[in-house]
Length: 235
Image 1 (cartoon, one colour):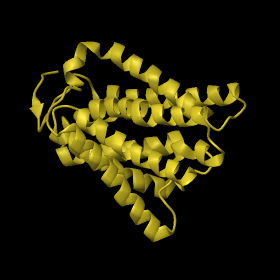
Image 2 (cartoon, helix red, strand yellow):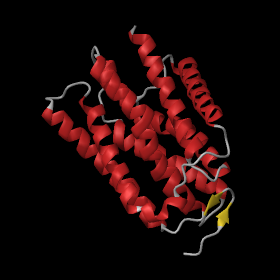
Image 3 (cartoon, helix red, strand yellow):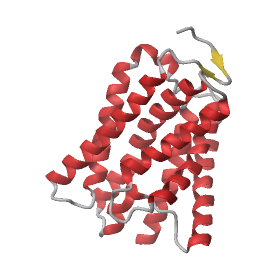
């Protein structure tokens, strides 16, 4: 495939089908990891987080091996939006949406990834598993798959706005399939809408930057807000 620049990012040398396969593979890795962890720990509250971490780690290793020759097409180098600004923007976006949900429905925006911590009295291991997954493994794995692979592939075949919207929608549906089966998770329809709104921010940053780093850091900021929010409620 001929390489060209498309509105801030490079047209990828992989197909849209390859990007979609990466999403399915990541979903399968998360599901298998969570299932094995739950079976091995007899359903411990933190087991799903540990399994998701293992699944995301394996997916990252597979991505690194498969796309090593396309390293320039999965850029993580500095440049464009400052990292600190991307992080603060992610925190602000999560805070804003959480405040709207609190005002309209009388309860905060649910984060099913943290359902295991909500269900019990989490110890240090559970908090460490949550921090590892939400602040490192999940943003990297999902950032590379959705904003590194899918969004450029869509943008090469459509407009920038349509690619951004479709990527955010795919990310929202992915989160619904991967996480809303956990106890205490949100209503699936409301969850899709909330994650669609949150998914637009990393997509905008990806569309405006040649590097995917800012979009990944914004995802870290979103997760950081939910993690700190739950931690404050548990104190």
